[in-house]
Image (cartoon, rainbow, N blue to C red; front, side, top):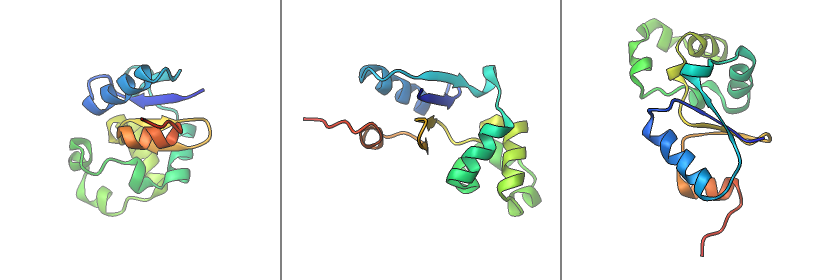
Length: 118
């Protein structure tokens, strides 16, 4: 089952959800704020993608971190930081069941789901 992770007021998450709906792709939506985050999921994402991809280093949550925490960030500390501050995770995070992807562009989602526009 495809799962889309994000927060409901994020414009990029809204675009991704709209795109999935328009293309008839079934998915489960998981809101970080309402549904929380599991340590095992974060560890899987960080292992697969690297903390640099999973953590949104342009977010206000990132800027709110202590500079020493940002400077010494690694896989383990990134997962711990995101558990305490879920908005650190780059949104949306798409888990297809085979691969994880962060961010959204229509072209990327077309490739992920092997759709071709005419």
